[in-house]
Amino acid sequence: MNGDKATGIAYCMAHHLTMEDGKQKLMIAAIRYHDTFVKQNGKWLFAERKLLVDWIENR
Image 1 (tube, rainbow, N blue to C red):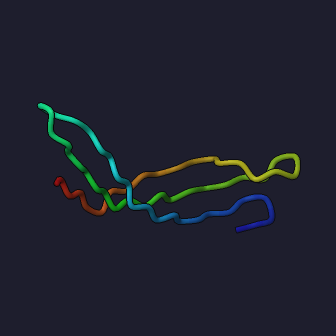
Image 2 (tube, rainbow, N blue to C red; image 1 turned 30 degrees about the vertical axis):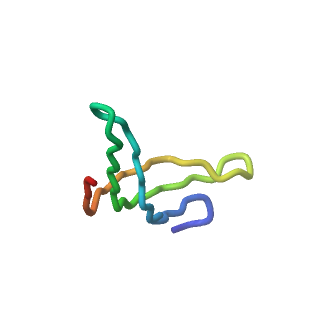
């Protein structure tokens, strides 16, 4: 993009630990963030973030 706009992709493995009926539950999700950035006053800021879930596993 030009000098004041950019895009990027971030990959993440999210782990969510909860308790249900006294038992631990673990949810793991493979996610991607498709980000758009804008430069304002010399600083890069998020302009938009799209979350995409590739898969979810429950243990």
